[in-house]
Image (tube, rainbow, N blue to C red; front, side):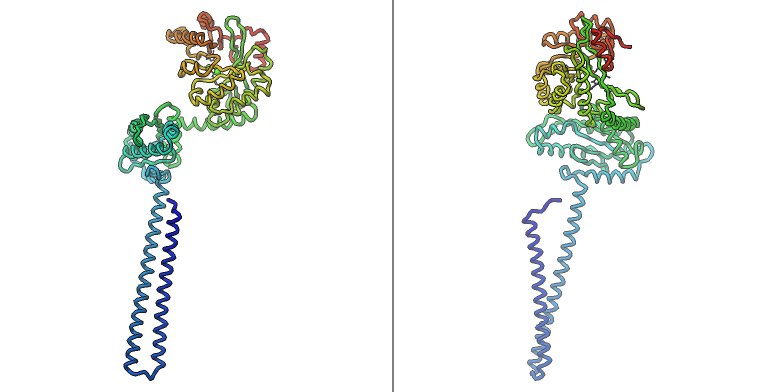
Length: 532
Ligand code: C2E
Ligand code: CA
Ligand code: CA
């Protein structure tokens, strides 16, 4: 509800008081007239001696005053009635306004979440006949925060209004477009002919939002990307909470894609969401209970056959779920905010283990993209190094390019500080992402690790072989060390050495092994230990 200003409140109070004064004055006047009549009647009755003329006069006076009294009463009653009527209209208006505000999004004028739920509830109470379907489309804009950051919140609001009216223009009479809050919208399309019709609507939404947005006198050349999750009634659900939950699961999947995307809810998504929440709960327990272990995979100097370092890899064996790979639990740790604690514990353990190795054997440790946005990361790493007594120049942080681009400034600060302290930086999975020359030059890296997909196919695919050759050359040109990942065969090893890449990691030498075995490997002069 719009808040009233002080002067509005004051004038309302004054007019209320004025009405009270007016009423008081009226009652006073009526009382005055009434008492005068009473007085006259009294005099009339007591002064028996009065002449007939005087008596007639007095009677006339009484009649006139009585008439005046009646008129006064009528006016007073009329005024009260009018006042009451006005008050009633005011109250009805205020209630209507409050109802509208409670059901409408003030920025776009579209129905809000409550109204959407009401409409959805009504739609689900009248399910369509065979073949037909109701569809709920949940929309979440991509990168809307950036529009707010770059253009300001006022322009951001304008963009939301424009999007609201574009969406409203796409649906049929009787369908509902609502803004659920922030940059989330929802569409309820009723009595559609089937899933294809819902998909068609989703595509029209994507197209409509991709058209450039004009705000003020500026054309924001950027179209707005959007993720859309779709659930159908009665196929997927028949209650409001269930259909919203399922559309939300589908939306989550759509958001995982880059750019605009739509996804229908699928039963197997539901199972995955449940499994994911089990893993999250168990992971929390495992981290707290110290059940995660670190395994070490040697990084070999292929020319000498010596292990020059080990990459720490997280391992988790659950008592009932069995071995859960890091590719599965690391993203869950990131999403659930557990990654910080996980990294802290594993890095501390790895540094302790690495202390026992000869001083020229390095420890490589993976840092997930999400963590690199955290400006306290550098300090945390440095304090673990100090606590465990591992020299900073023995630690190599492995990051991916996607980590660099998520928040360039934070990444530069964190990596810059670590590098100043002597920690080395390696770019992991190189060749799969942006493979940008800019990153190689601007981030002052020490090493690139060629992704294992190129090593795997270089014998059969000339393009992969060319890429490996180019990356080795790039490393030499920029004075960066180059490690080949996923070396599995003697042929791959020989070919890499021949191309001038002497560092390799992979099952050809060893899979990741427990700390004791890694220790044995360095103690034995790092003879090649083949995968069991
Ligand atoms: P990554 O950093 O690329 O690690 C290398 C992965 O390749 C490891 O899988 C390793 O076991 C596997 N690998 C090594 N040699 C070969 C080979 O010759 N052939 C094949 N096919 N695979 C090989 P793993 O241990 O399952 O780790 C997967 C990913 O999980 C890692 O990829 C890394 O991105 C992430 N990860 C593992 N531990 C941690 C951790 O402690 N923190 C973070 N943030 N990420 C981790
Ligand atoms: Ca790695
Ligand atoms: Ca890698």
